[in-house]
Image 1 (cartoon, helix red, strand yellow):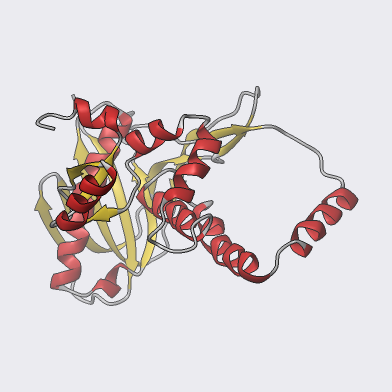
Image 2: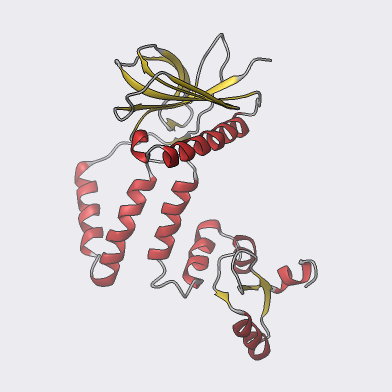
Length: 267
């Protein structure tokens, strides 16, 4: 079985000694004055119209102008698209980090392409998309609704909405990934929360979104304040709360629901 190849390609003007080839399996590093073309696999629009057949991924020729390029090709025999991409991205990220430390992070200033190669009839077609309805918009209706919402924003709510909007608009540019999660979670910490100590509004909002019971959200999502050992002991004595140790935080203890406490090993 031949390898699937995952290409990450940067253009740079900071390297003047080339060609250079380094094999750090499963990644091959080539730094060269490159004029060759690639056949790559691209994803089309991440939003598709419900009920309509559409092409979500296809091959395309990537033509490069004359220049200096850093070519990182990770290879894998994994056939599961999600696992294969994760493996290749992880190995590529390590090489980029090492080269940044050895050279300079500015050499990776311009990303040209990252994704699968199509070679000798072999490649991985993967794409993330979501379906949405096709709808018409009346300008007069939209104008009035926008103005109504803006007129209702004032004071603290207006400030929090403006800050939240900065993160929300950026999150739309990402497919599901860690970066998107961080941006969207930051929104939760801006609205409905007012500060970083009272987590309850997040759980209450998640109840409305998911239609799940409050205790289920607290148990499964695991969002809540972290206490130190002495605080946890005092709350156990005063209120009968139960806690488990938060292994990611030194001297951190998190309150758990009774159902979770009774099923946790050793509790």
